[in-house]
Image (tube, rainbow, N blue to C red; front, side, top):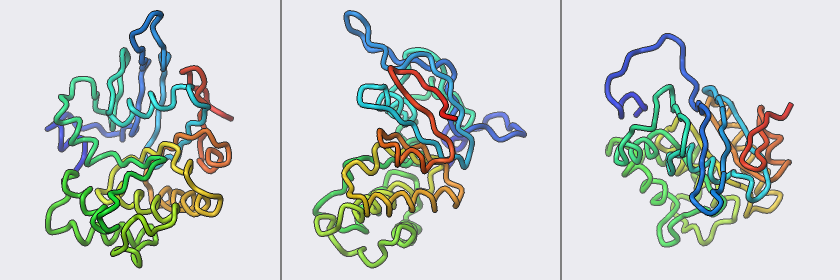
Length: 239
């Protein structure tokens, strides 16, 4: 399911639009004085790009992720997803768009502990628009893609940290999203598991998936083909 499917018929354009386009997007939280979590920001991410956003705690990373993932709305500016303005999309369609178009990977794996690895991935297909007849095959294909076909019947509690995160990646990509957003995806992993997950991201990038990874770790950031620094709510490209 694409953005156009969710939003109805729109005028076709010849040139492909960026997956992410921020135009002077700003996020201000009411306080005394107001908190500028994100100053007016422009950002373009083309289809198939692998981008990292690096910055310390309190730099605005989480605010940016929430906006990109349609979990929050900007105070000002415009966010276009695949060329479609998102400001006027009602909450119900925003939820459908998140489920079918954006995959999320977090520092905490958010796997259901009493469900098997396969069941965790299958649950993601229930709200992402995957046809019922395709759900099992798609879940198995996603688990095979991340190297967990031999763990489908295991509970997350008996997996290593790296395996849990790979299961989370399988859940994120099972709906074949256009965009994968990863928030500190290696924050709870040892060095060996970190390497395994980053290699998986490299493979997904080679497959053509658009990745945006938010991290404070320079070793994670440098794996991306394009790097952006965030500090005090401002973005700056890293040469």
